[in-house]
Image 1: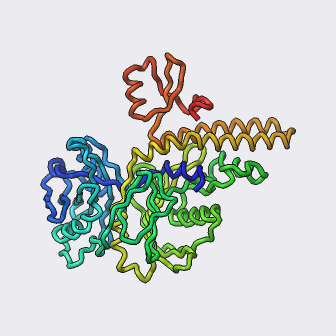
Image 2: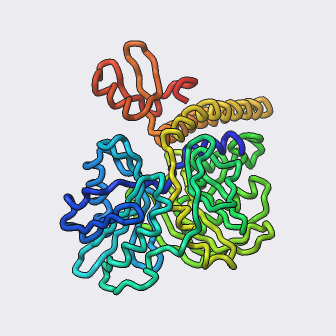
Image 3: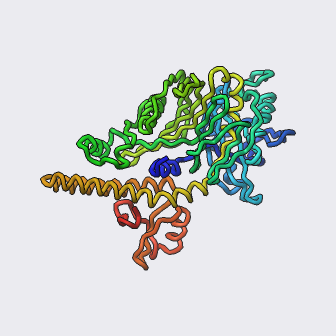
Length: 459
């Protein structure tokens, strides 16, 4: 994996975090609680004062934040199989009980009378992957938000999963529980896990696709420079150029094919049979994709289950896409679905490690990319002396784009550039640290806006 790709892999906003839960009932009305004999706790019932699934989930998450002193880190939204509900995995740290790491699953379902019911299942993060299935089975044996009688195989319960064993990446950035015989690929790291099973099953969790929006004028100018033969052997020559805002299923398919082509791999055969938009907050766009995929590796068609999310572009057109992908050979699909869902439920990211890695890797890697770009621009200027004025304008635009790219990186890393007026110096620090410094001494410290970044220091 090249350095540039590793940098952006460390920037990925990673998924499947989880949550702690025992006192949600105090904030959400008369909810019912089950301490599951096989481990974990279940809370379910009507969420007072809420009429939408998103509102109910937000109310529960805010209650958890207030109770435990830590903001829940929420992963992808999805629909529980066989139901009309919306669900998410999420994580948090119980700051009031020895910083215990907890994991869980939150489900919300609209009912008659403009009401919403929710269910919360939580356990210690280290064992959540092994207790989620029994908790789901127990929940759907007693919880009927739409008035339907429970069946022997509840609609929301996952199929029986194989026994899983916890695996932590060598860089400690993420962990996942996998069945016996599975192998984690060497390219995993930085909060992204890619693994394969002996039967041809595979997962790619939190896999990033950084793209440039071809609707953006700056991106179009870069593409024109590439077409004229400029920027050879730079990161720009191997970037993914794709219009933002289109159908997410098509976007996933096209970016996947483009990335494989850049890596010298054959195109895959892919057929998306269903696409369901996921309700998310803000400008993020997510879709749940079902279909079939053949990686042309001799193992035939696989059943594909993917959540694909796309963030809005920055000022100069860069935007991040993330895929959470599972694939199972068709002949094993029925018996392996439960295992794949259990793997997804067990995936956990150490965000502090990911951020520290990104902080260590990003600065030298981006500096190297910028240096290559400057060298390429200088070569173009030498070859086309008559275009000096044009080249100067291009350099100015590239410099502005470098600043913007760094600002985007800072956003993903939860960092801010501040100025020390006493020492006349700039520094990049965590957002929380920056806020504290500016608040405590506003005469000395101030935030630095992107146009005022110092070259060689801030970007």
